[in-house]
Length: 336
Image: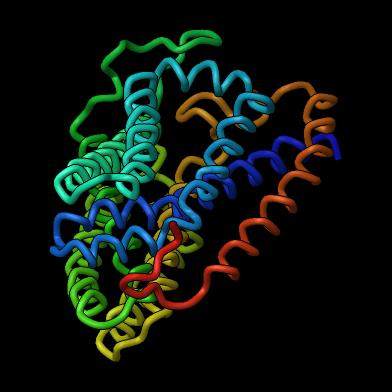
């Protein structure tokens, strides 16, 4: 089993990161959509749609980051200096957003609540944008010198990383809109259903633009996606994405409530799989592999025993909370 431990851990961390992206993505998306929806009652419904689950969603971020630190210390030591700025700003924005989220319910008057709402919106946009920038910086490659980061302080800031940052804002906005279609009703649902269509087109456009840029910028990506026979093996991803796009807009047009959210999750899953196929088997593109970045086998095995207990507990708790707060969120009925 020892040779497979790094692969098992890479899969676990990848799953944790994806779980964070899709779960925290929709509640960040709700904050992103705040300026597009008017009305005190509507804003309260939007917040109450994510209030029971938003803090639990961030558990997966801790699990992914902690797993990287413990099991792939070399990758952690290289990636963290490379991404200090966007990750630090992201964490500050998430903290600021969390404070605003709670304080808006304790505001003494409408003007004070509106100030906290603006803080909630700002934290949502900044955290999402920084996540996208960090993703872009990771994908475009990290300079390595020996066993340390070899680049400069501003290497993360490129046109490509800025594009991925804006693209993720659109993607999280799409997730938030589809979540609200599922959890709300009436005029608010009609409003976010309309927003979901535009955000879907924007998200798909950014997926295409980022994919094209990756192929142009990286010979390794170009070889994997455009050279036979690997091109035939990975072609299933864009084909499935095209089919899912048809299903999404069909579900949106027919007034479905759950299907648009599931399709939006599918967009993220297929994009995530495509990214994984592009960078495999690198833990730090383009030079540090999964095997090279891994901790000693004994450490990996010991931590795997802990993860085998922790991850099921997190899954059970998360599933129970989502089941407990199932159903529509109505005006005047809130979590707080």
